[in-house]
Amino acid sequence: MGIVERKTVLRVELLHKEYTMGKDLRLQVLKGVDMEVREGEIVVVVGPSGSGKSTLLHLLGGLDRPTSGKVFVHDADLSLMTEEELAAFRNQKLGFVFQFHHLMPEFTAMENVAMPALIKGEALIAASQRATELLQEVGLEDRRDHKPSELSGGEQQRVAVARALMNDPQLILADEPSGNLDEQNSLKLHELLMSLAEKRKLTFVIATHNLDLTKRANRVLQLVDGKLVTGIRSLA
Image (tube, rainbow, N blue to C red):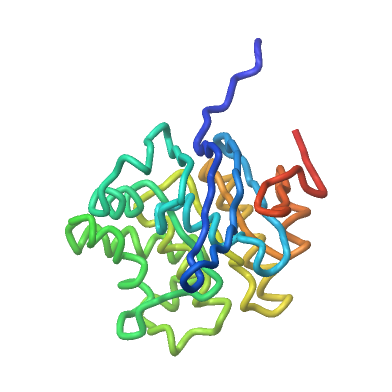
């Protein structure tokens, strides 16, 4: 039996991003990034602070627009979408996990997890039920009715992971997901991410400084002078 070719989930072509700093100064952050990520891959992007890792993830997720170049997610060209279309696409097709959890403090863990489905227009009862199931999956079923201020940092980030999964995306973009956690909680979060990736056949692109995550990745890419190069580790 022949090898099954995995679908391309994410494709980036000649991505540039520059910022205007004052009247005449332009800061070039990304200088022609090319990348392709296939279904089920865990790809880690490394680089020093200020190298453009967060900028790259924001462009991949349609949170910002490139100066030039293209981002395709499931063959959809993000550059052709209006802001309203981009917002709907992000909500329904992508999951995001950031260094800081960005949970809404006035809502419970369950309500925070359910929010993407409610924004999409799903009924409260169905969204609440699935949010509860996701909290159980990340080991927080007993914290369902707690607000973020009543949760530890590691618990807050697991709620954020559950929220990222709410609309069943196949691509998760994570920007320093364990950057605000101690070593023990970081390892727990990494185990959770890897478990979810295997169980749900998820594709991850993760920007990180964390060496433990680079060891768990299928591929490690490094941002050098605004471009991606093969990093310290690459697995077939």
